[in-house]
Length: 340
Ligand code: 5MM
Image 1 (cartoon, protein in one colour):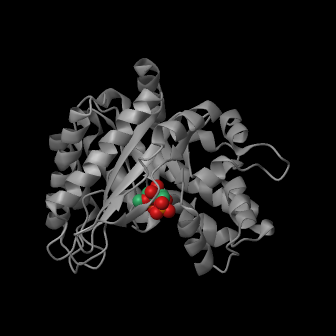
Image 2 (spheres, protein in one colour):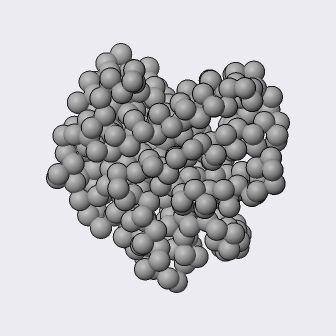
């Protein structure tokens, strides 16, 4: 295991206030998003959309790493150039999503467990050989009546830790993504309580599996009220609750925390990240950045709509959202950026 190489990559992913773009939607999720906009649910449409993203000029000014899914990882530009080469040439670090989705957690109605550990070492070796330098695994935790159970939290944490250990062994940085889902009417304090229990279990399992914390990135949810909760806290209250919690729960040796957006409106996700860095940046032991999918891609997809005549304006939107989130990593985002 070349731990120094892994640590160097982890640091590079969060250097210079840059963030990550998650473009690793599974075929199913990508098709669902296409269907809503009337975009054909085909291999070629997914390929064309991903080509649009990776060929956006100067994306590397704001984006350090791209997370791909297996299909995208093996695709090429229309002119035949492999996507992996295009991304490397752009100076962006390549990541790969390696969980195989989630299934029902047996004996626990309403709960899910991520799968994909079978044959993972072999898959990691192949991805690393092809140019991947980091990986990602998401464990989903649902808040509902009497859930999540401790069993589900611990089982997902254990899988995340096993995955993380295998990644480091293969020379890849593991992005550890325990996602407490936003859906529901629960208040912010319930999200806080559950996320606390989840991160406690995750760091406990990471330690038990001898994962070097200097060589991981954490990809958590922000501390937010449920999407349908009647009380929605202000941007400052969310930022305050999230950072105070993370300061107590995430070891200082972790180089970076890169949030998922979780279904927040894209501008609000940027405002939350900005408020955290504006209020706390000087006091933070780790970089606080983004690894958004929907909060970067939503406006891009809406502009593209599957039409090649819209590629340029969709790329401009991608560049703009990336720039706004980069500004948020410095605590320098201002709403007026949206109109400039
Ligand atoms: C939570 O989803 C991750 C971050 O995306 P958002 O910023 O939109 O919340 C994302 O990386 C996700 O893990 C991938 O899109 C893969 O999802 P699926 O469900 O398609 O495997």
